[in-house]
Length: 369
Image (cartoon, rainbow, N blue to C red; front, side, top):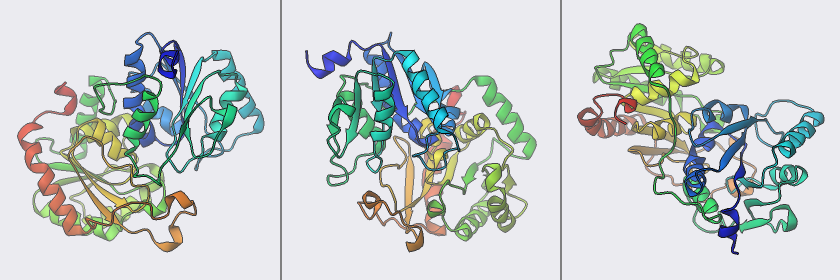
């Protein structure tokens, strides 16, 4: 029996994706492939607290285990005893297989050790080094020595090793219709005319190196408002000061919704907007999942996280030397430098992307399905 036939017998799978919300969304086509290849298969996602917040809206996932591990940035403080409790909880679930999803700059070994200690008999994952018995089904990781694939394709290729494929490679995300109705009412109460051109501007990101110049957002936003665009600023409460400075630069015509939208409402708002303008962060992948055109200001870091299967413009800007990663795999490995980010480039991209939107996106994405 070959590897794919062997995995076809496994009905209780653990998918390990321990980083951010966008990474979870970019893994959803691979999860769909696992589900479609064996519909009775139960799929449990082990992910971070940030990833778990969006995982509940991914229909292909049957269960979620939330844990912020110490080897992922921004993880919460926890004790060794909590990690041991996680291993025990995994063992109790009696998974017959695990698939470890990592970007090429991450090591799979800590996750593989969790699976090993939990007694999971089959583990599939990429690794640059030979993992011997730690990963039973090792896929040698050739990136970034070979051309870097999009993160979605990387994970699709991984699960294909287990015989799992799908004809639908779109990102998966689903909200109840009442959420969209409530969000539309909330946006209207804030002063947004949903019948006129409006965009979401999300200027935050989890890492300083991925933050585009606020002044560039201000200059582009002012001109877009002169052209008739309504701008809704979004961000988490921790980004309130940063967004407030941009709001001040744009003036009162812009609407600051920072901290006023739950994650569900943010997803719905992006789905209803005509365009998203954002740094390279989670909302970009929400836009891809909700079929909203997106302009992304993309720091020259990991090249594989661009918007997936959605109309988009990617505008690149350099990372200051002091903020560049110390990880060798993230140092100048294929991220483009052009087209270059600038206020005018943002305006041009919004104009280009919005033209077909106003012809076809007469109703929110959720009403078109």
